[in-house]
Structures are given as structure tokens and as C-alpha cells.
Length: 163
Image (cartoon, rainbow, N blue to C red; front, side, top):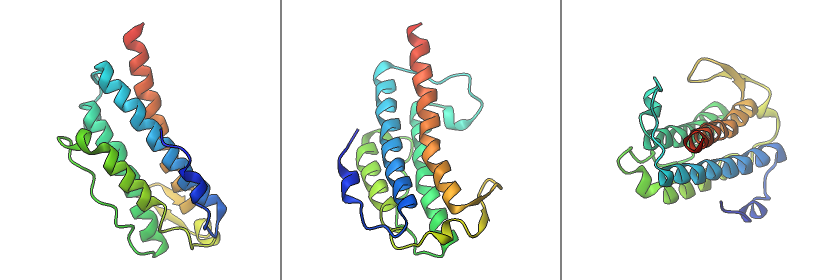
């Protein structure tokens, strides 16, 4: 997991969103680290109904796609310019490109919200793409938890292989 970069992210009008950007970086990288461990261990996903669980690669695409979309949605809701995050590599290319894509994604996460004051993160509730209402800060908290949840799932799968 990369560390130390959080010290360079200082110019945010609202420290709360700065913390969420840093947490997203930490949690997404932690998920990718566990995903790599699972690939190395030969973890196979089975018994899941969701197409996001067809393979470890489809799960990685799912986590990266949502990490991208959370910031795209946030910028749309706040009326900010798009974050210019590249599309997620497809399932056949994601493993080979995971490091460069995650670096790009997280770099782009750092940019769009730095000049936004605190109020817009709370003053309006928006409907998400999955029809749940959130203020922007709550959606960003959800974005942080998403890779955490999948990391735990992968860790549990790895643990079940050894028991």
C-alpha cells in the first residue's frame, strides 16, 4: 500500500472532504492489495448470483467502476466540471493495468473538490443511480466503505481456503 502521499494533500477548503479523499485512496489501495493476494492464492469466486462476482477480475472492475462513478456523480451533483477519470479497463485488461489505473483514478479524485466549501456537501439531498437519497458527503462516505466491504469479502474467501 502506498503511504506518505496524504501529506501533500493540504489545500482543501473543507477538511472533511479532504479526509474522505484520503480515506478513499487508502481503502482502494488496500482492496487492490488483498485482490492481488487472492489472485496469487488462486481464489475462485463461486456461488454468487451477481455478475460482479463471476471472477476476481470482474470484482475488481466492479470496485474500480464504482470508485470512478462516485466522483463523476459527485461532480455532476455539485455542478463541477467532470473529473476526467478514464474508463475502467475491461475485464480482460484490468489485471495488467490495475496499478496505473488506480494511480490515475486516485490522482483524479484529489482534484475536483478542493475548492468546494463545506455547505454543498450537506445542504441538498440527491438521488443516487441506485435510487437512494444522500447528501454528497454521505455518498462519499459510502464510496470509502465500498472497497472496504469487498476487501472483507475477499479476505473471508481467502480464510475459508485455509480452514
